[in-house]
Amino acid sequence: MKILYIMVLLIFMLYAQELVSDSNETTTIFSVLEENNNSLNFCLAVENKDSKYCSKIQNKDEKSACFGILKRNSGYCNMVVDEDLKNSCLSIALSDIDYCKKIIDNKKQNSCMEFYRKNDLDEVETCEE
Image 1 (cartoon, one colour):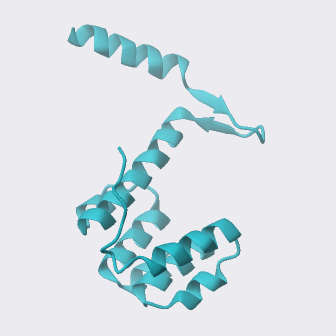
Image 2 (spheres, one colour):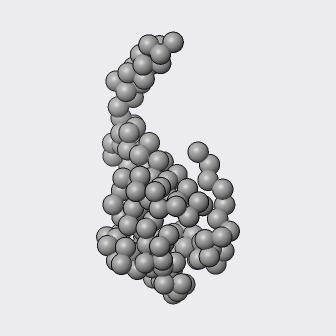
């Protein structure tokens, strides 16, 4: 049975290399899986208040933001290159919703404000694997 699983995995890896997005940019299946894994680990870190999940995040900005939010340490947030993510992180680390207002993307700004309002890291929704 193990051999069957390994064969299926190998076939999947060989034939499912790339997906084409609407903007004609190529996204690999593995980057999609990594992105989902990063999101899950971020969620689990906040839900469980456990930085071991932050360590598992591959994206440097998301990893720094995770540590910044969890440890409430703006030093981690300041390492984030993406300005919207940095401001989101700073809003939690410094307990200052004004950083949410600096976020350019409206959807991310609303998400930041909602996360900030309901979050002293006690009311986080359950993560779905």
